[in-house]
Length: 406
Ligand code: SAH
Image (cartoon, rainbow, N blue to C red; front, side, top):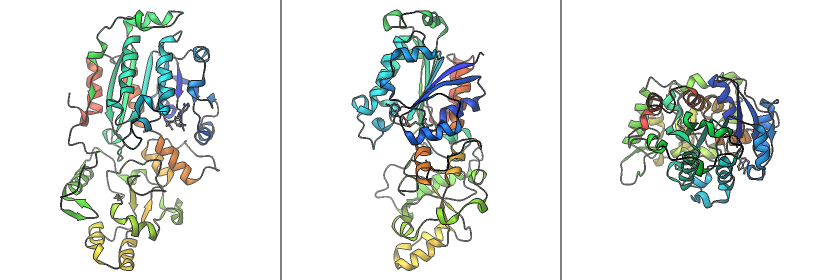
């Protein structure tokens, strides 16, 4: 394949760019676009030769896009409009404006890109933004595949269930690309691509999902039910997933003062911490609030193995504050370092942060990013000749098989 010209929208710290490199596809990012100055500083530090546009996407004229003459778009539009926490404003949300702009721009491009890859949070699959995306892609003659994948599906001990869509201009429509007026809906007949696509929905027993409602269920310790505990045990037994220790920095490189959980945090949030050990084969999703907030932002690591979590937490609430603290301190709990979070997110060793970026900023941008190895696998499937045919769909099912029900 000739070197692909890639447009990276909402580029952040360049997760997509790393995935592209990792995929082995011959490609160059001809422009990366983002408005976040911190993310852009990090991007530039790692990819000094890539043109980085510090601009709002919706402010870029059609002509500037046309001049790039790109073959592929990779994008992770802002996810707040689709998350449960983000009020679910969907396409009406102002943060969706740029995404709607892209969808409206696409049919007007002189040359339609051959490939499109989009990443988003769980929830996007049932949004009207997704429906608009599908309508646009079908109208322009793309064949596409959607799936929900978590890094655990590719053997990485970290949950980050995300929606992915990969689209390819179907061979019978590629002649449209030469149209100097660009593609418009009226040019293309609906040739049934839509029916061929399938969303690989996750099963009810999805290991990545927190249990919905723990009320009225017997709590063992740490507000954990028998079911939660069983789920974690099962995940830790899954030998197809690597161990956390494979992603850790050498202990001597870590300034423990910076990463150990403070007594105040232990006392206040001890019972809701997600604790993992070096031999665990699981961890929860690291979000942008990691290191600042405790609830649901990511796992913490138990560094001292002499005490079992169960023995520390059972009947803890019957002790005085001081006794509680002394017990919890025995576990030596610490946050994962940004480097370790980056490792779990598939970033290569060559990735680094400029010196002036604080640890909290590092967690924040990593939490907004994506799993590089998951996207690399999708890119490989997308560029394979099977894509768009039943063989390719089978490969997608294998990748996202825990989630397939159709
Ligand atoms: N994939 C990226 C992260 C995407 S998060 C990574 O690997 O880091 C979404 C990004 O979109 C954020 O960095 C945010 O700054 C950027 N963004 C949001 N709205 C934008 C807009 N209208 N124009 C350009 N960038 C935007």
